Length: 125
Image 1 (cartoon, rainbow, N blue to C red):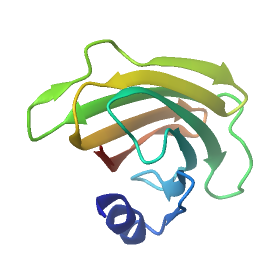
Image 2: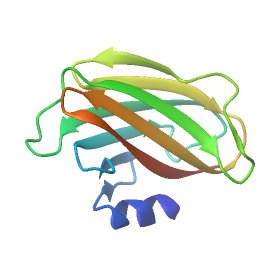
Image 3: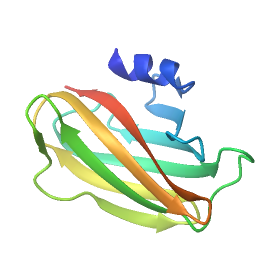
Image 4: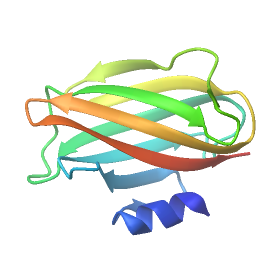
């Protein structure tokens, strides 16, 4: 499964419940993501994303988050931009997958620690 391979490559963890933890590209943040439904299916999807300082493990209270779903094989994203809400380092992201296949979720995080990003690959059923 691509998600497990990606997480293993970046030292992340995954579980059968959809909980995943991984570091951003520059190692500033640890992201903990819970997907509902899991495994992801076509239609409505909700992510709960917790942003922690990778060095201390503390929540990043001043973080901002943007998530961009992209289907590289077909060269498109989702029809409506994801809605991101939350504060105190915990965010809820809602959007809808338009079709099954391999998707990339790009997480862009910014805070007083700096800007960083990560890409999570998911297989949508």
